[in-house]
Image (cartoon, rainbow, N blue to C red; front, top):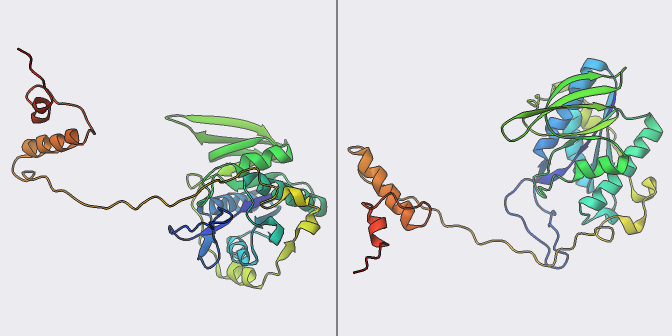
Length: 289
């Protein structure tokens, strides 16, 4: 099987900084990791390769330092990696990103043969939109199997795949033709530890870089210029002050502690009254006559 996996390098920090001029995320000087869901996509692809044969190619769109994420994926058993990097791609939203990734997948197919499956993480740690996978599938004309939690069967000869995904309180089984695009998260599998031979191979691997010119990209469809999403204002919400309030009596009289906790919750409007005897209820009762 010929499998492509799209991964993303994301900031490894909760301290997100926004450029006040472009209203886009500042990534320079921020430690980065492979998006966690994407690692499970890599694992799924490698497992299918080990079972059916073929090759796994990793694609990422990002700055030159995103090569570290590609080498991480290679150390997990992927065969090839391509860095899609160009200053023209900067500040792209999901719409412009899927445009570039679709060009990359098509170039990959033109050079190395048809792709049977495309894997993506279900959502990115930074943007958290969950739009890239479905958007890429739409551009490639592929059926999309999103939020997959299990791969039941794959029939490369019959060009068919059966997966399941977890919905609210139940599971859905989906059957699709190949090729297809699948988005996954941590529920699908457990990511392996990199072996020493694969780590050495990843460190020595000569990465291929594709630019906008290599992909034949339209300058008006990439980066900030090709992004229809416009952020008019961005801000960081004020941090919450933490605190703990202990309810006395729990060790000797759990009922008294529970009643005291209920009074506190009612006073803050979290829950309603507990009856006419409740102190909070009595405080809000109006008697006429």
